[in-house]
Amino acid sequence: MADARAGLTAPPTGTGARIPAQRGGTPGGVAPPAAGVARATALSMVALVAVGLTRLVHGSLVSHATDRATYGLVGSLLATVVVASLVLPGGASSAMAKFVAFHRGAGDVAAARAAHRFLTRLSVASAALLALGAALIAARLYHLGWADTGAVGLLTVAYSLYTVDKAALYGFGRVAGYARLEIATSVLAIGATVLVVVLGWHGYLLPLALGYGLFVLGARALLHGTVRGERADRYRRGEILGYTALASIGTLAGAGFLQGTQLLAYWLVAPAQAAWFAAAVALVAPAYFLPRALGLALFPAMARAHGAGDTGAIRRQADLSTRALAVLLAPVFAVAQFLAPQVLVFFGGPGYAPGATVLRLMLATTYLGVVQVPAINALASGTRRAAWIPAVAATSGCLIGLATVAVLGPRLAATGVALGYLVGSAVTAGVPVALVWRAHGMRWAGPLTRSVGLIAAACAVGMLVPAGPADWAAAGGALLVALAVLHRDLCRLRRG
Image (cartoon, helix red, strand yellow):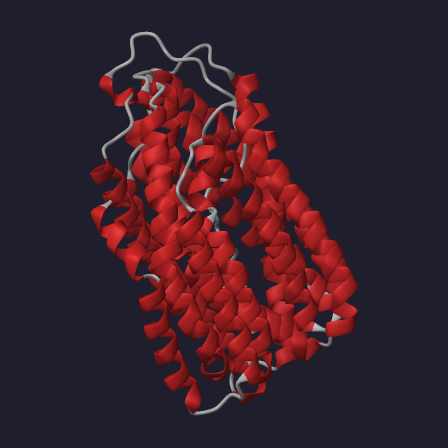
């Protein structure tokens, strides 16, 4: 289905309670060196590139094989699956990454195993219930047959368990195994998608369910020996449940905002324009590879640093990561603003070219979502009070954004939907970044102002310049301007 290997699996954005330090801890409780985070990020990046290629290949194949109305429906069904999987498994995923990593860092492996077992059972039970609900709701709303209804339920189970088991691999430090497994199952999902399209079948959800389901089986095989052994008789189950509930709110409001916006687009605008928005969602997904990879590595590292009381490590990681994302990705997003029409034609055909304005706005929004990742991880991995901030910001941004979509969507069609998503995302990203900026006295004013200004200027100019062969020349000029404006920031970044 469209937006394959579904949903922008964002880094944990939930909230967390402070966990008391364990007695008898080991040096593992100290935050790992930057090299360890860099290696985990690199491995995660490789794996997520495989996921992104699967998403793009799947979405392009489906969009070429169907009309725009069908493609819009496919995207809406996937959004339904992702939203359902975020209700509880999204929070359980964040809890798995935090509690397993924290207890391992404190030297209490038995408690880490106990937390893993409890969260695994919770994810299985919730996935089954959510799958039933998602399938029935999708069947009622979209008038699905029994086969498509079953596919929605199957994908909901597979994707829900996938998010939690992936976090377990990170929590137990099995990053290399995760990368190999992600690549292998992505290749299988692509092959299954090609088979479905070539044979003329209409089960567009099934290749994704196959890929996620095989990942779950592989992840549990990898961890079988690790999770066996002595488990703690007593562990803070209530604290884990509280964290999971709060994390689910933040994750649902954050990652679910995009999927909810896509669902509103399906109901508020014409089918062709809903397809433009679905295509934009699929195309901006690769922009989240680096921050997602960084977040997957940063979150357990920051959780261990909080457990060790190493505030300096948290500040250094947040500072360097935020400046690197802001400065290094700004030229890429500026160039993409001018190539939006060409990319849409390649992705779905000439009929998608008029959706360039939608894609440009989604690119600007995605940039905000990228830059916020380190700040969110710094807050979510910390004390209960700090961990509330991402959840409150995400919920506020989601509500404001969806209200804006409801107002602008009927008036401006897909462009109004994209504007609503931009407004809500600005709130979601702005609050945590501003608070971390102030709390740690970060020197972000210059690089953030220059980077965001470049994206805004490129978006505005791109909308004014008619699409055509000059797009490539304009993109080259944008790259040169961006490098000149950010030269000082790039040099400082090289010095650390």
